[in-house]
Amino acid sequence: MNLNLIEDACQAQGSRHRGRLAGTFGEVGCFSLNDGKIYAAGEGGYLLIDNPVIAARAAAYRTH
Ligand SMILES: *Cc1c(COP(=O)(O)O)cnc(C)c1O
Image (tube, rainbow, N blue to C red):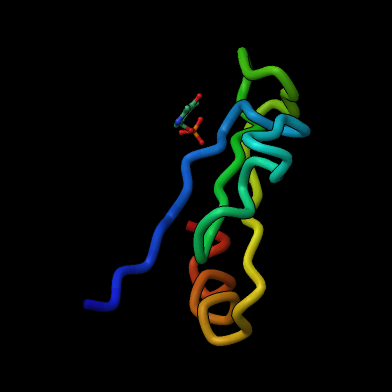
């Protein structure tokens, strides 16, 4: 079985589980910067991705 983990780490910037940073457990780590979040920038967010194929696909959706 080949499962890809998309990690919801929306408000976990800088936190760790067993020494590993949030957002680095799966293929994609997702963070939110919307109002009301720990790190707010009005709206938006960002992804942590180390697979160039997945990063290119995600970038194609960045303005949606
Ligand atoms: C805010 C939040 C979301 C939704 O993210 P948005 O980019 O604001 O829509 C998802 N998961 C968690 C844990 C959140 O805190």
